[in-house]
Image 1 (cartoon, helix red, strand yellow):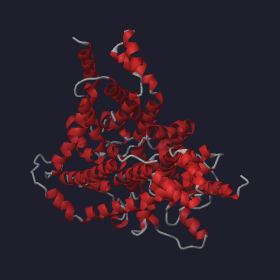
Image 2 (cartoon, chains in turn purple, green):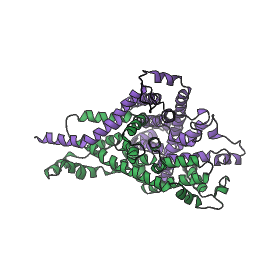
Image 3 (cartoon, chains in turn yellow, green):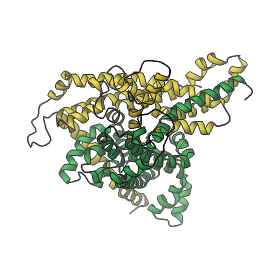
Image 4 (cartoon, each protein chain N blue to C red):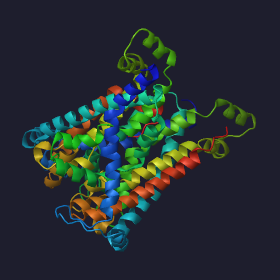
Length: 294
Length: 270
């Protein structure tokens, strides 16, 4: 047996268990979900008739699915710009200072490592209509009290604020790394040309930060598409919030599959989610594969 | 600091930090208030008490949930660290037919969202009796495709000469990975471990589905259900949240540099 063959045999031996894992716990279940999405099934019944695309048609006509899809889009459209803008401002501010930079960075990062379930309950308590500190502050300022999570008009934004709080520190760290990657000479050249302040930011920093911005937007979008734990826990007694105003795609899947046992429809909804994430990921790869021109 | 602009930047950063830290403060303050004080908005408890903590610890199975989370997160992290680094090493450093195909296959699984897999996992777990077991909670996370991808990148940077020298000295193929390559990528491996542990410590969707009895709950599932049942006993809800949050923040205080720099080092997403 040659040396190359022996090494190849070792490689296959080392890969045996991992490959088995990826095949049986990742790939096969993905196909299985697609298979289930084409069948009608309540998980208990042995009968599992093939129904073609009927589950997808049912979803298209289910107002809750439409609600979840629209809400998810709103989470993305509100949350991503907010967290990118705040993250960028904070990163630029942190770059300007010399002392306490590490301390501030750590403080802003804390929510990102905090257990989400616990944080969600703390925020629910902060939003409390009569006893929460937010309304306490409004009362102090002689402003009208707000219902926050109990209002169909405000609940989605209340959840988004919590999510932005949670991801802000991560966003700041990503931006700080992006800013540090910009070669010094560009700032020196810009200074020679007399560019500064807003012009410098708008025409140099932002374009050079483009890959970081694209990554942040895509990563954030995928996070918001999969929003579940925050929503379930912040509106726990009233899953999905008043009038389903905080309902997300994943919470919808959870209710459909594991509370109403409509496995076929739930699997169909996850297939839709998969398709959306796939398209976004592929778009990102196309955009980011263009080389950055410094 | 003489520059007024810089002073303003410090001021703004300080104000932002107060806003970001306030939920933690409110959690702690509420956890220290007796029930009679909980609906009163004062920032500092008038009669601080630890009774809420003792009540949560004795009345619920909190210690058990904490232990469950510890077991699940520790085993999953050990498994990810071992298998991901082994696969990353093999894909980066050994040459064999099918290497490209295998790598692409593992990479492709990154695009499958967890939500799509939970229904088949549940079906699988019911069929094999994994519902409500530690194995059932853990099996989906025992390897991570992202970890493989990450470690492979770092393993590519390990010089081949180092491995060849090891081969000359008669080191076994496993020894080359374990004793020579692995120590070279320690920072990346540490970052992977930290984020895998955190991810599993926080995991909620799959555990809520697979866990059925109070004894098997992990900390997030236990806290969610306890808080849901506690009604308006916010002093207890906040005490249980604080008990979950404080150990994590304690670890973060010690490892914060590594954790934050781990993100930049690896471009890591949790």
